[in-house]
Length: 443
Image (tube, rainbow, N blue to C red; front, side, top):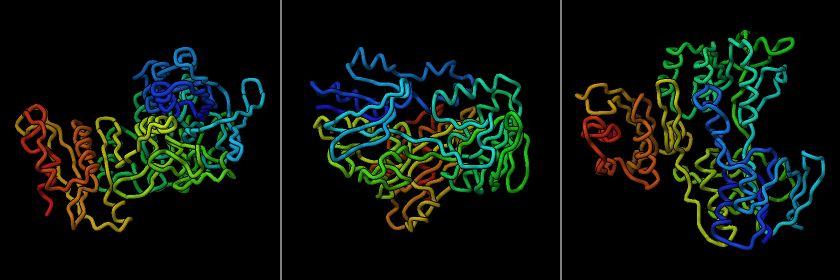
């Protein structure tokens, strides 16, 4: 078969490698808009802060390695502009030489990922205003910081906004976060987000909550940001207000999109058009708790969906089992973990829910150097099925979130949480794990 893959990062190359390992005789061609393949985007903030010494550390395999070692025709600077689903043709432009291309396919995988949302604010094109999605973005920010940039403004208090606020602060910058909504980290309930706000203030981050950006100003580069409540000096701006799936080139193809413009796929990663598959950040993910398609673009989902798409495209049938909405963020001293539904999400979905919130230590209370963690458990009022969990603390958060994610994946109840045989020794845990302590409070 002639197999085309649009996109050379996590989902696309996971699929390609599965095809290589599990089939033979196929012509696999990958069309990548840029020149970097298969890299860890989530590591970019830590390259900027200096924790990771180079963007080279984030690259798993180069295009040359895919070509020479695995026989994959990995092309660079090939931007796909149109998909002809009737005649099974993909066309676009090679930005390296300006030539156009038209390539036939028997099966096609769309793995084009997402792009940063950059609103059309006045002055947004001034030098010194960035978003962060690619290795090239990171390099531009690093280069710009080489000059004396003291005041940094981060617009948006989500994943990237928080991680980049920490990175800039660690570089000695004075950091301001502007968030148009009423709290940072919207994926957490307000009572949990208070801990994030407190940590930001302790780390000398200036918070401008419930403020909307209106414009930027400056002469040769950005010098100030204007909101509906004030005007603030700045030397660098990072815009981190969200992402959008790269699917606009599919207009008119008949390929169905849904949540946020993401491509609608079934459990086999098939789209609404025969022989066309999609995976990763540009595709939907089935949410097991919401029981409907969602769009939560994370590297974990992209790699899994890519692997499953690759197998199905060579007739080895596997299904994607869905997500439960797990994530973890480092924010200075704190680890912010969540999985399943927040209480706010459950209420929006009209799910009858209750919640329990406790404060516990990550290890046995009598063992030295224990750290406090705040644990919130969300459950179905009638069935006591675990719907979600949020944990914020200094140590041991990721361990507990993973336990809760597993419990939610298997539709466990709060009573069944108590039955779990979790590891215990005083330096690692109490006899009742914090999530079990919370489950004991459920009535």
